[in-house]
Structure formats: C-alpha cells, structure tokens
Image 1: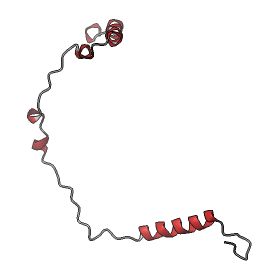
Image 2 (image 1 turned 30 degrees about the vertical axis):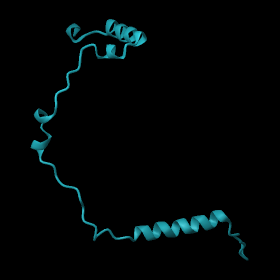
Image 3 (image 1 turned 90 degrees about the horizontal axis):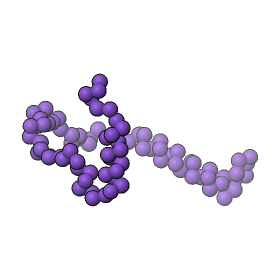
Image 4 (image 1 turned 135 degrees about the vertical axis):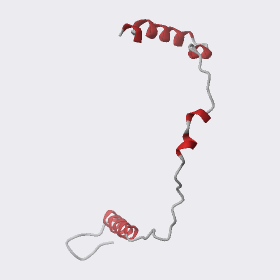
Length: 86
C-alpha cells in the first residue's frame, strides 16, 4: 500500500491508525447500564475468632526431612539475637 504523498502508508502506520481508532471508540463506551456486583462486607464477618486455628509447630521445617534445611535454620537461629536481648 502506497499513498501518493510525502508519507508512505506502511503496515506499522496502518496498525497505529487502527489501534488509535479502537482506543478512541473504547473511550466513548458507556458503562452506565452495567450494575455493580460488589457488596459491602460486614466487619463482624471478618472476625478472627471464626477463622479455623492452625497448629504450627516450633520446628515446622523438620517436616520436610531435609538435612540442609535443618542446618540453615539452626545457623539462622543461632546467629540472630532474640527479643530477650533487647
């Protein structure tokens, strides 16, 4: 496709023209007839006392049965100060 002017119409130019027209039409779209489906959640429904309790062991990583992980966690625990130091 070639135009008889200074600016040749390439496939990129055509793509830009079509994309620009699509964006302009999308910008004119009305969402007025679309009813929102979101509903407010009562704060009492989010209370933590209703959440199921999960019992997490102090040595949860040992369930993976990985010696390297055990070594890394032990090194990390040994080299980090606890709250009792502060």
